[in-house]
Length: 296
Ligand code: PSU
Ligand code: MN
Image 1 (cartoon, rainbow, N blue to C red):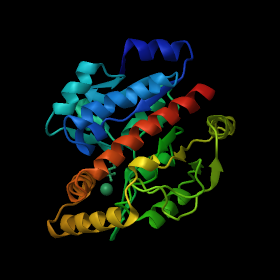
Image 2: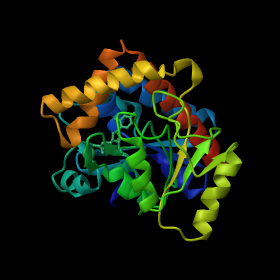
Image 3: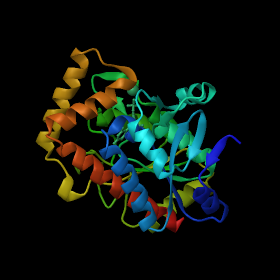
């Protein structure tokens, strides 16, 4: 079979229980060891605590795996030089028998193949600052794959207004979960508009159900602000982001390396505060996604 399911995920899908997909790039490229492992396991626990089954998605020795064991999370968390798989990378990793991590785009593709309609992550990719042609494949995937993505907006290391334009062009509904503006990843409020605010899991679920009835072939973004206690002050986040982005530029870092480099530098420049925010929002988003999945 093309997909390798963990027994629990297989059972849950067969008996129509709520399942939430989780990505693996944040394990291999988003956070350092052992925070990556601990956060991935804490996200799974948050999904379970809210009554759903977590399915972390990755490619292990060329096998697309839906639902990782704790040992598999641990070994992925320690793995070096793992491919970061967006749409274009999936056939390469599978065809060459690699162990690889899936991005938001890669995870959406696999979740949809597996019959999972909701997915939780930190921040989606977007349009890079100063590089309006570096548009994350996440935005294109959201326009063509019917999976709801719960996140804290696009990472604020990106050009958020341009990111919103691309989402609009691709026909992606942008919801704010208990927020009236777009969250900016490390901070709660970008000041940018969303399409609609939803206040409960059941309201969010009803938009997803409507999209299903309409036979919509696109994703839905459900944005949740980072928990208040862990949010960074806007000036601190912005200053670190500006410096990290300039360093990426001057060191000639580009393509798929930009996001991991900038995220890592921002952690250093904020004395780890951005990492605490990143962790808190990932776990919170996993919980919200599970609550919505339970309503579906
Ligand atoms: N959010 C995080 N950490 C991450 C990412 C998102 O908190 O590491 C990853 C996601 O997998 C997303 C990817 O799909 O970064 C975007 O990369 P790019 O800008 O190269 O498309
Ligand atoms: Mn890119």
